[in-house]
Image 1 (tube, one colour):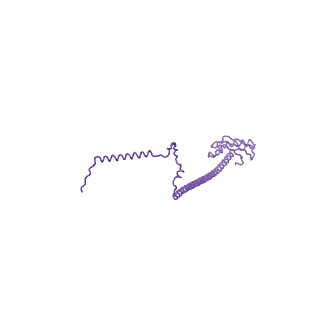
Image 2: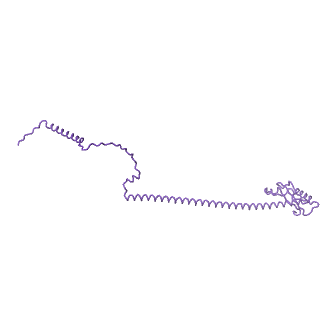
Image 3: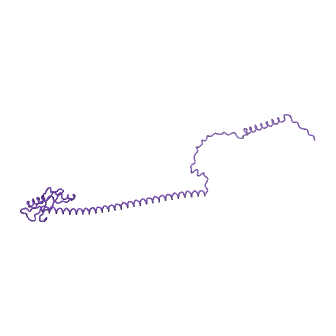
Length: 245
């Protein structure tokens, strides 16, 4: 069947676009009008603006933070408690270990000091014993030296009396048993410097005879040892011709 082709109506498309734009514009205006002119059943309320000062921000304290934190599960809390308990126990063990170390150190120092003091005391006793022994030996040697010296002194005194007795001449009117004490000053070698009667026999003639005998016997026998000779530099001895023969 043969169809008749439609011919495009001049200006139809343009007219359609214009109509569509008009409708869209009207709908937009209608929406705006409805938005700003909605019907009101009550008189408009007056809103009073209130200025609210913003409070300063506060930093939450640790306790507040902990309160706001979500509660820990029991297992986590128990683990934390055990960890804290372990730290406390470890700190206590360290404290006890340090106290024990300090105690041992103090004990060792005391033992060391006691040992040193004991050693020093022993050394002092040993030194004192050695000193006492040396003093004893020295004293014994001195005693023996003095005894030998005294023996030598007595021996030389006897030799002197014998030589004086051999040089003595019996005076007129001599009484047997007469005795006087003389003090003689000598020089090394036995030379006589002076003779003094320090204790008279009561007979001046006898006393002068003894003085003469001492001078006549010079030099007297004296020891060569200088230390021993000091005992003869000022010599005093009794003279009895009957005993010294």
